Image (cartoon, rainbow, N blue to C red; front, side):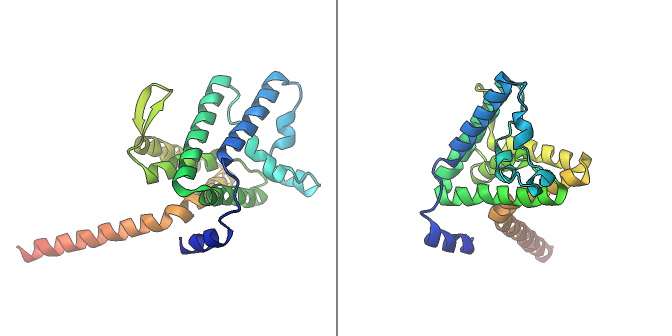
Length: 215
């Protein structure tokens, strides 16, 4: 994270405050418009399409982040609430600049994956908000469906299982999209994970050596 520290010292004042709130509002507006005026194919003009972008529809490079992930109003409200909750929590923990870097780096990686596969989505990127929150505060308790208490670490395991399931059964393009969507999480937490693995390996070696000496 030394590079991120340097970037924050130099550009730390340049960020979008309450970023996830704007994304949630934008997604909600798109959902409401499509739900009320279903005869207008709005989503068709917002989805990421490499071919369409190459033909001048450059807004698709960013508009795909506002594509709703559900057509059901109840589930849509639930998911938007979770995205706002985790996004705002991460922003409060990291600060606005670092959260902007986390989310926009995920968007950039998704765009790169989109130009390789021809299609991009923020579905898997948004799921990394769950993983990031669980990595920071695994014992945080969330009221699932507003009344079922569940710890973040258990939701993260479900999230990880879903990503693995999609990766295994998905096409090669889905596999690439998932991998690219996860790069922001790996950039922020990959070093901590490797240090934890090395620490456990070192601890097991020490414990094994101690046992051998006492035999």
